[in-house]
Image (cartoon, rainbow, N blue to C red; front, side, top):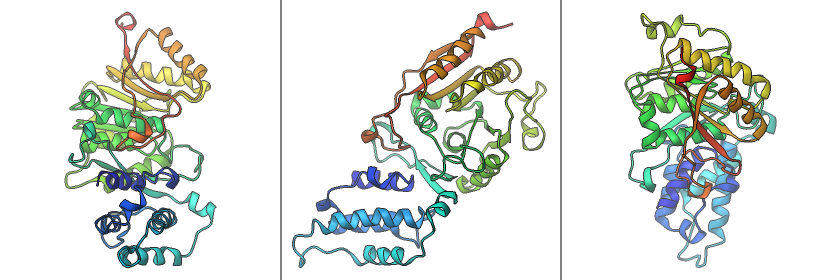
Length: 346
């Protein structure tokens, strides 16, 4: 049933149907597997949040097609009524236009990788609200979770990554959908995590997602607007975190921040600010290396500022071997630990 476990995890993350780990038809037609598919993927009365109807329809069409091609004996093999009824219901629903589908925010459930492939681990999931269809939505790229954030979340899901944030005061730059911060707040034992972005719409979206991820006690997460190059506003929700020394953090996180060379000076200024004024000891940054020159500009800037830069040895598993936080590894993603070196200290 491990194949079903992976399929379910990919399905709730809205992985493109072409890339789902669909078992062979001979496996899918087994009555126990059909029951599991319905109960874990299509039962509208017990599952929440479900993927958008158009996505469910596409996935179920693939599953049914593979099943039909494997039916050898109509007397012995059959597709269960629950799945067929789900198909009929999905086909009958009114269809939104492609643009309407793209603009609508959908709840997406991300499931963390299991350790050493062990499927008995307690499921650790995070729900975000995203627009997958549009790269730009409300003037920002932040309404979708990008590969570097999934890579960083995978790193933090490991024992080494968790040790860096457990019990710490954490700040995230460019938090976007809030996946990394929500994962830290819900599962990694952080003292607190301040999830920052420059867009108020993203902060409001993260606040709405906090309630989706709470189970009992409130989460120690504080979404906040931060315009790089300016002081972080310590009023409002952040006021309770301010000590006699001001607002202080131990670790900063960031993913996919270095995509525009014009932003590098502002990012470097903010990193220096973190070290000098907010007490940060380590800045963990993950970057998708779409443009080697842009990231090299950032690394050169770190050297100019006397920051110590260490590339962490963590690499995401190949896509076909991933068990959660699924993302492509076709473009290299690197994670660095940046510290204020002794020579740069005052």
